[in-house]
Length: 96
Image 1 (tube, rainbow, N blue to C red):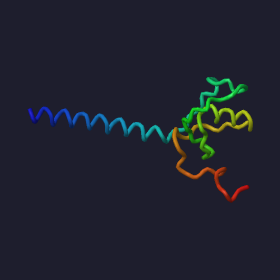
Image 2 (cartoon, rainbow, N blue to C red):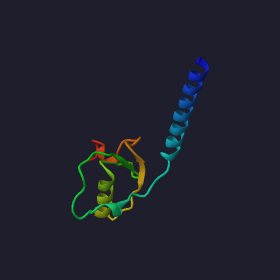
Image 3 (cartoon, rainbow, N blue to C red):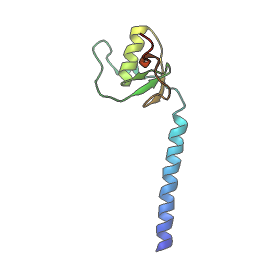
Image 4 (cartoon, rainbow, N blue to C red):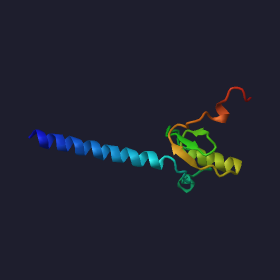
């Protein structure tokens, strides 16, 4: 009985470890934002689902990244979902 419990616990830990390894590896890949999914001429949702752009700027969600691309005629891609690792150049208080 103890051996079965230990085996199940080990199997569960191994599954969780493999899942995290894949997530970390995928975080290094840039992806194109799905801008076609949003009606950018109207407005974006206010739901906070942060994405970090390849310009190291934190956008509140993917729609806002697409909206800024449209406004600036740029092609910023999604560096990773979640917070940026480096400070955003626009959040620097020395630049006014």
